[in-house]
Length: 280
Image (cartoon, rainbow, N blue to C red; front, side):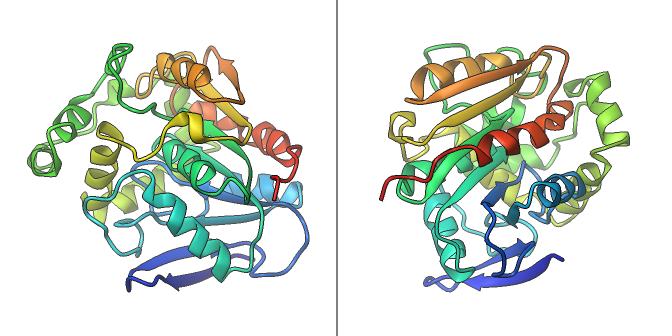
């Protein structure tokens, strides 16, 4: 059973959360960070994989998504405090974090902010912090939104007025995944898009500007999972992050794109469950 709950923060904002245990159970807890755009509602393949492994799965909508209050100007690091408040409200102590695509940076932010609570991080097809150490945009089929975001929120808002998805961003394997196992992801992304571009705009600005923490601050073990044929977040991003994270390993899936790489989620959950509790 999934319990939906709105968590009220000290600043008056609301974060919409989903919890597969509702406070019960003694298995490992994993907080899922959704992609951009998504509503934050749990996706069926994740629910199935978590149930099969006795994992308590918690998901939530980032500010501006799926019923969560917007927070214009937020940086990536802001996710750490938000998730700490969610965990407190749900009675969760230590937990692992997983994020896909735009959720990857926010999962890393939680580990940087909460080293005494986060047991490990899985980052699937996650974008790297903006840097000039490699060509950050190279290999992206449609980098226009991120390029606009680098110039600020106003520029990204203007770009959103005419922005359209480029189908060349996805591979044949991605479209097969969206027609099959990950059909729920496509439906959820459409729902998020219908709610307006605010969350996605804030995500892109956060990605393309200063994150608010350094990768070196992530002391928890990190698993990077990357599709070798990803046309949204190219493999160079994962390779660069592996070099900058203190305790990272990289799984490359050569034939996967940006969506089909999510088929690694069950194995990644197994990896995450095997990590030790953080030092208190």
